[in-house]
Image (cartoon, rainbow, N blue to C red; front, top):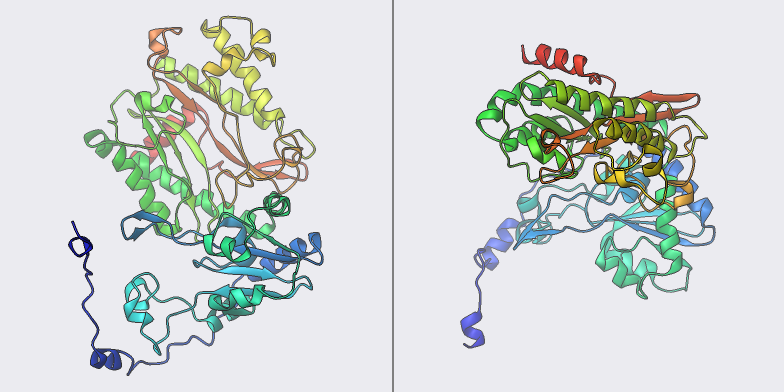
Length: 471
């Protein structure tokens, strides 16, 4: 087979000189000159100043990221790196924030494809006739209150003098290649600091998270109303129902929804969401709507598909609810982050002993050198929440997992029990049951505030709420 035999074609027909000339003429000026400054711009400026103060005399480079391929010539819908959005308020692809050693800041962007060259109708990825209108540099500058330049000018802007530079690597291959040398210890520290700065939420962020929770609450109500149709279809229907709410009121879901009916609830991160929804089963719904500012909720509820828990289902549900209550009682500024998990485990381990499945005493299982209870409660009991569902994951352990809570932290509380359908060490009636109640919580000056308290917690309240919503 020759190279000629392997030659592929293009869906796009050749552009004649006459068509080229015709396409470049007759377009109106659509520049938007009166755009207001985004409400987040002031908060973002404060965040950039904090970051600059931590690295005096150094250039800081934070890219938004690039499109990621889904298949062949199809890309996923773009979602910027959270640190970039946190520092700028921008959500466009290919952007790069550069903070110079003296604090001067420039946002390098790929702007609207103008009408003076053929990009707007030739380029399938960035051309306006193919992909939609991007803001002009002027529009972005006015909206974000930041100086902007074309991303094509990034390379010469970073060249020249050997300025000490830190870059958030692994986000944009082009930026990594431009700065060369591979990741350094300084770059790793930079990524860590960017995560740690986001641990404490400012008032604007808290309001965004409240909005995400409110949308998620309405999405859970939508799912309850859709249960009859789901019993005629599958988990897929419920996934779509929740996604519709998230997409309508926000940007998208903040993570892949877990719509786990029956034995699927025993899989911690089930997201195939393709199984049957049967009367008499439980539905574990773990889902969160992402706002248009990209902050996400993360809530879990266990719902009886019939609207009523069986006696065993109720007992297990209330056991998890008591563990959740015990965890919540630990939340206050100054408390160890891991303390709420330990409190929840104490309740669950004694509950497992009461069920007769624990092969040792609760005290033995809770010892660090044992942990047999983790067969049925494998994961931790919560995590930070914000722009990412597992927010600030790059933070050092001593400031996060092994650190202490502080006012402004937003986290989830989600102890659970998971009994696998093939577990021969437990009674048959427990097999295939999964239980998790997950709340979104803000740490305040004197304790905590439940952000997700519009959704019921107690079994009786869950049943009454489902009856009211479905009526």
